[in-house]
Amino acid sequence: MKIAVFPGDGIGGEVVDEALRVLERVGGKYGLKIETEKALVGGGAYDEYGVPLPEKSLSLAKQADAVLLGAVGGPKWEPLDYEFRPERALLGLRSELDLFANLRPAKIYPALADSSSLKREVVEGIDIMVVRELVGGIYFGRPKGVEKLADGTERGVNTLVYTTPEIERIARIAFEIAMKRGKRVCSVDKANVLECTELWRRVVTKSHAGYPEVELSHMYVDNCAMQLVRYPGQFDVIVTTNMFGDILSDISAMLTGSIGMLPSASLGATSGMYEPVHGSAPDIAGQDKANPIATILSVAMMLHYTLDAAEAARDIEQAVQKVLDAGYRTPDIAADGVKPVGTKQMGQLIVDAIET
Ligand code: IPM
Ligand code: MG
Image (cartoon, rainbow, N blue to C red; front, side):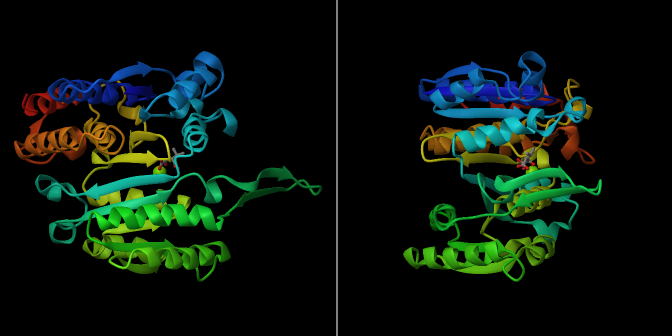
């Protein structure tokens, strides 16, 4: 198996290094033949090649069985035109590899229930999977752009668009995943206002016919945001559009205490990209402060979904749990009475917790 590794910007390199050490450990344990190759994407790629997603990196991603990505972006590149921004590398990889299904699990570790900004009894036991459509909707719809008008003012446009097949394929993924979990899917839309999501609701409802064991409900996005902080325990799988998924997955992540804990998988028909949900955190980059767990758990998702090595994935998840139970914490999940550690030590503790 070949893995394209894109550390990216900010803390990306630090967290990816730890994740690769964990991968090496389980790879050795289970005799997995894994080859990795690193390349630049994001701001670093722009500095070197003048574009955030160089052709070389894109073709590496296309050849590879999976992509592991750290994070991209930083204040240095914010003044650039949209097409040169680091974030374009992410969007480019998603659409070029047709990674239409973005899986963002938000699961609370009992040891961290007190790190959440919500009360322990509200967040205890939550285990939510946000299934976000990733290559369509308002992120990619046309027309888009900002134009100057004759009167000197400007007009900005983005277009929310979904076709039946695009909705069907993401709905199917959500139902398939629900079958392996709690068998409940909540489809989130704004069908009371947006015609496009009225279609979304109809197509999801129709696709549900193939999954009689799964219970399907529908919720408007504003209500869903409210329900997520009111009673998150009611959710199993949430399936939604690109932009609603962007927003709701950040809320779900924060319920678990820290966005530094949350992994993600972006799946297409033939490839997968794995990355932490968090960003490049330029304010703490290079200081050994970042939490590597989200990236380490992304490697576990990669083992599960692309490398077909469920046991190795479970090993990683259990090692993370063990280290947290033992009281070790990076600054983002610090609390009274814990053992503070940096990025590297956290990575090492997790490697050591994987029995050989
Ligand atoms: C995410 C991020 C990206 C998105 C940005 C960085 C383009 O917020 O992966 O959730 O909006 O999809
Ligand atoms: Mg986001």
